[in-house]
Structures are given as C-alpha cells and as structure tokens.
Length: 410
Image (tube, rainbow, N blue to C red; front, top):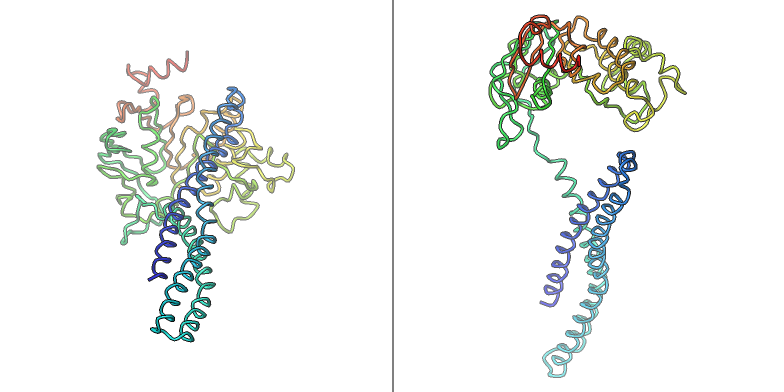
C-alpha cells in the first residue's frame, strides 16, 4: 500500500510536469518568433524608433517564459528530495509496524530484517525510475508539440486513383469557379468562367482585393475550389496527380523567394542532374549572368538569408532564371515587376518576354504597360470578371480598365 501511495504521488507530479513542459515549449516558440521578427524587420524598427517597443515586447515574452520555466524546474528538482522523503517515510512506517509485530510475537525478527533489507534494495531502483519518469513526461510534452505541427491536417489531398498528366496539350478552363478562404467572410471569387488556350498570354488586372492572386493560386492547387472546377485538357485538376499538375507550371511572384544558398543552387532549386552550362544559359536569358559573374565567387556565391546580399532586381532575375531553367509549359507571373525601379523593371521585363515566349501565361499586373500585348485582358472587381478583351478593345469601352489606364497615365 505504501509503495502504491508513493507511485500515485510521483505520478501526479509527473503529469503536472508534462503540462508545464508543454507550456514552456509554447512560450519558447513565441519568444523565438519575436526574435525572428525583430531581426527581419530591423530597418523598420530603427526607422520608426520602435526599438523600445520591440524591447518591451521581447521582455514581456521572456518574463513569461522565465516564470513558466522556473515552475517547471521547481517540479523537476522536487523529484529527488521528494523520493528521498517518501523513502524515509516508508522505512519509518515499516520500522514502527514491524517492531510491533516482532515484539508481539506475530513475526519472526529474522523475517522482518530480511524484508527490511529487501526493501532497501528496492529504494535505489525506485529513485532511478522516478527520475526517468519525470524525464519521460518532459520529453512527451515536447514530442506532442512537434507532432501537432507534423500531423496538422492537410486540406489539399491527392485522390488514391489520381490520373497522370504527362504534358499540357490544349487548354486550361475555369468552369463556374467560386472560392472563399473562410465561409464567414464570403466568397473571394464568384462564378468565374475562363478558357486559356495553349500558348496564349492572359493578363489579369484590377484593384487590390479583387481576387487576382487567388485566381492564379487555384490553378496549381494551393487551394481547392468551393464550387465549379478547373480543368487542364478536360481533366479536373483534383483528379490529376498533384506532382504532375505542379510540374507543368513555373511561378514568379512579386516577392522573390530565395534561400540562404549559392546562386547556382537557387537557380536549380528542385531540379536534378542540371549542367552548369544549362544554368548559365538560363541566367543569360534572364539578364542575370553579368551581375552573377561580378559577385565574389560567381555562380557559387552565397546570397544570404532570402537573398539579402542582392538588390531587388537581381533577386527577381534569379527567380526568372529558375523558372526558365524549369522550362514549364504554363507560367504564372504574380506582379513580378511591381516592386522594382524603372531600370530593374526594364531588365526584368526583357527577361519575362523571353520567358513567356511560346508559353501559356497568366500575368497578374498593376503596371498596365507590361500587359498591353496580352491576347486577352481580364478586369476583375470584387471577385468577378467585369471586363475582358484585348487592350485596344477595352480602351474603346468606358469602364474600369479605361479608368485604371487613365489613373496610371496621370
């Protein structure tokens, strides 16, 4: 009974330790997030004289973490003295009870000492077990937090009987497509109908929040439509292997997504068995070869976290070189030049013209000068296509497109 009582006490503290350990992991994650934000936004923090605010924010998170960790360490350090105390308490009770049994003649003295000796031999393993139990509880709490991330539900799933898509041959079609990020916020896209023949350049324009980027993000299945369907060569993208869908596409976004690696590895990202000659050819087409060769180690120069050692135009030309090297039949350009200066925009625009040649392209643009030669321009507003046609046709129609062009001309 005494051993059972001891196990219950230690088990209760172990469960408490597990809860505290989970809180510590959560607080540590918050603190690391604050540090990462501060390092990434250092210019903004200095520019807005917000160092004091950021310091206070970090101090608040650090204090909560410190208090939570201190409580955890109290419980952990309590394990050794508690096990000692419980061991002594149990021995004391055994001596009292056993001596009464011996003096009353109900138990032989030799048997009592044998039992007492056996109990002493159990104490050390029990202490080791209690320490291991505490460590296990702490480890389980950390593991549960990791599993929470690894086992997060995946909304985009490939069907077990998904069909292959070896190549893109005819057209992309949006049929009565509607989509909402959250049901409570209402639809972002409403009854979109669109056909994009192979080799055509389709431009999408409109005010911020009109649904332009969402329209493009649905094609590589970053999200799934709520109503209707998107079809490639007559096949619903939800019925095609996910790898095959995305293998047909190259994506260049407004923010140049690069990695803390060499220029060469950033260009060949995700591709295998690529020769240096092919990388150089892609860089030349993207107007990137000259600035690459001007760096310290050429194509083997490390560009820093998110390409921090390069200018905005240089970063964007690397992402274009990456898309050129992949040589995709379908190209998605999401405001690829909107954040560049005029000189960089000219170089990037020349690279994009090479990239879009003979490809099916969906171009999202705020700068309308970049999409005047599109085969068809879609004007979106509040999730709907309100105008469509070539540049010359839309300029003859009073409406949103004419208004956008006049505003930019002004």
